[in-house]
Length: 395
Image 1: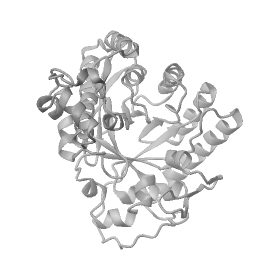
Image 2: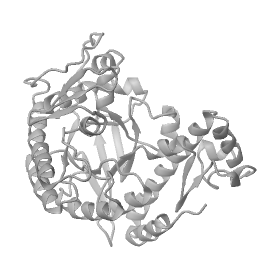
Image 3: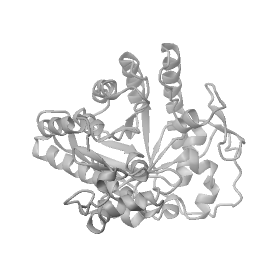
């Protein structure tokens, strides 16, 4: 049975409704993945994650390899046990964090060397090591190691990064075929514990990544070569780095059709509702972003067509829930006035409650998207919804 199946297509756009099968269960697509950077979605228990409707979450290879280390994760029972999450997990390769968080990074065709933000140690990471670490963590979906570029970046740097991404993708595929044999280099961060032998687990799905900035010709050339290598799924990387909504949408609309229709398409790190709607219109199936919990920790609540800032004094005496009609724990039990009070007195319950609400909001959005694709009217509905989100929020 194929690991990805398109169940229905929208009649007036490239949007599709599908299912993704992984070793730890099925994911309904289009899907949004909450981000558990260091092995936990900040401030939210797995029980509330499950109640939100999330079927798959993302964990961060870069952070986990530095702390607590892959050997510790394995000793504790693997990533699913560490996170107390028995559903699918996707891990990124660490490439984005290397280039965004490490101030002293040396990159060449072999890989990268960077300074750990935890203890200042020099760490080497390449395609084989990144693949090996993700496999050892026990993820269901793992990402190829790629080179991300900042914005702006000149044409020569974009080309160099795309070329490396392609070559590293070939090496990642070879490494996963070897199931750990022939891995070039060793992880330079020793673990204090020795992993216990464990029974073999099904091989994870491996996704290739298309880079190229907002250069459409480079995106096409990179996509063609990544598709030529052949992967279980394909990601569009290097966006949501400051290029703006219009440039992002133009790039996604151009790139998504270049990726195989019979494989899942993943837009990495994109999470504003209007951006998600536009990407689904272009045929994208998977998303991740830290916005639901990061904004929740900053008193910012997502609502249909807009947002709510709970620190505003207008909410002092409000007995309304954050979103009337929302079935999340936050909206069923707490008022806007109470949540504003929690934030103003630095009570941690405030950020927790808004994170719970925002995660549920995103899963309801994805459920609405899937329903409208099934109906065949997603194109017209999505355009109307996007217009609401793009309007200036005056609340």
